[in-house]
Image (cartoon, rainbow, N blue to C red; front, side, top):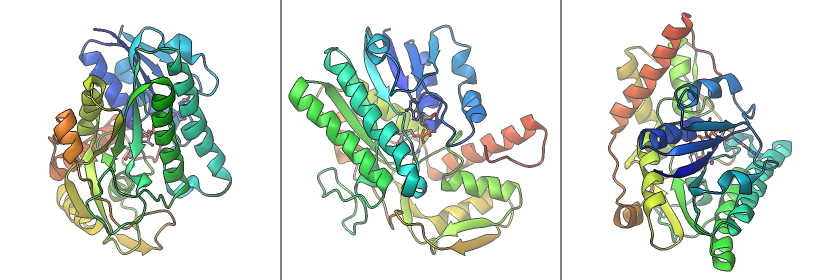
Length: 324
Ligand SMILES: NC(=O)c1ccc[n+]([C@@H]2O[C@H](COP(=O)([O-])OP(=O)(O)OC[C@H]3O[C@@H](n4cnc5c(N)ncnc54)[C@H](O)[C@@H]3O)[C@@H](O)[C@H]2O)c1
């Protein structure tokens, strides 16, 4: 088995992908600067299994300053997941972080790959590039009109991948994930906030009327899509990666209430600027070209995420779950 690099290795999806690559026999270089968007201690927890592995090397550095060419030399693939995530915080002065970690960092990676012809790039993009649309399900060739600064930075990076391919032959696949969830999900994301709130008996804030829909994707399915994109030798292009379980937030809360076995104290608050009403992935291309299939239902996936929070609670010995 060969060598690969994972940027954002300590994050939610990156840590699962790193474990999968190690299990498949790869030598993995994980790059992460442990930003404080959410608790760096929690990110160390994510990496606990990988760190103890003899084939895992952690490079605790910022992509914008480290020696990428040196780190990528000899790799078969760079899985680029590092980013400043989150739609709601991408306005105002915070936008700087989004430009640095999403656009400038991706351009630096592409510059390094320009000199290393054999290395493939698998870039983690987002359904946020589509913006508000009634044209559902979303297809890769639909018009792109992001409505959040975050979405605009993810689209810029996607476009950079393509133009480095056109000009310098960099090989890439970009994966537009639709709301990924499961154990280790970022604490700012809806399922995490709801589970933490419910377990702590706190009120749950729902943005808008709760009728907005999302196509939820279990993390192991997103990881599998990365593995398939790595092996894919066809056209350099983007793929939608969705779980095929498009449901409303109110429906999710219904399932959660059943799984948690307790009533939820729900408060409706104003919808956040930048949040779209609906997402729904047309995954025809990923199924046809990559062999992508989803394997985890929303009920099973939610159960796994709830169990992860419960086991963290047991480990910390406390009866509350911190937000970190
Ligand atoms: N989680 C989702 O539902 C979702 C949906 C669409 C797209 N994505 C994309 O998937 C990727 C992973 O998302 P996630 O939810 O795991 O996020 P995450 O915040 O858990 O992980 C991102 C990691 O990148 C690291 N990082 C950020 N900037 C860095 C830099 N300049 N140098 C080095 N490391 C840096 C952070 O410390 C963090 O550990 C991101 O690119 C995100 O935009 C996620």
